[in-house]
Length: 273
Image (cartoon, rainbow, N blue to C red; front, side):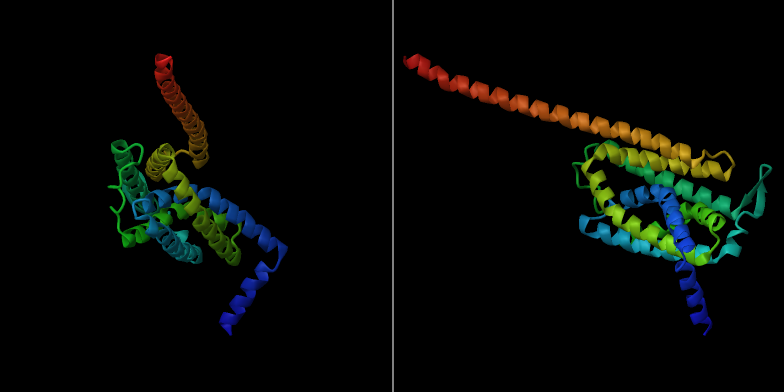
């Protein structure tokens, strides 16, 4: 009976217009705050063979749903994350700070490795990079790093809504959208190596900012997103311009080859005359 009562309360909240307005608002918020998470998952899964990437993204994000719901249900525990554990150089260090530093350093290492691989193969023409990661390793890393990315978004969701059914539904919807969007994003990045390079640089920037936030010197996320959005737009125009130049060069080479062939064919005819 208590279980049925909780389910009835859950469904009652979602049956009201105000409840669904809260769900849609929080889903949008989770997606905006989860941009860096999608980029990381895409780059991490790209180390796997193509037939395993979708499975890794789906299972990894499925586990991420469990961790996010666990964070939401542990609201009282989340409020204690900022309690000081010890002091370093006159600054109080909490569990929240330790998670940010660990996650930030992990992102910096991963993005630096990705940038090193791209420097060795900027066009992505070599297959040596594929298969360097294991399926299990990628699946485990996705929910672990998702905890770092979702801490602030979960706290924000609690502050915005505070209604557990609304927050859980919004988290599930946001992760489902992430699963659906990660495939096309992965294919697009694979087809455009310069954008993949930009994505790795974005993660390096995010990791550095997470470490800075732990020590109170972080940059607001909005500035990071705008900077990378601007750089992404510029990169898209650059890729498009390079593709146009490449097509023009190919067309010119084909035209020159045809002209030379026509001249060679006409030379014997003029000689016989």
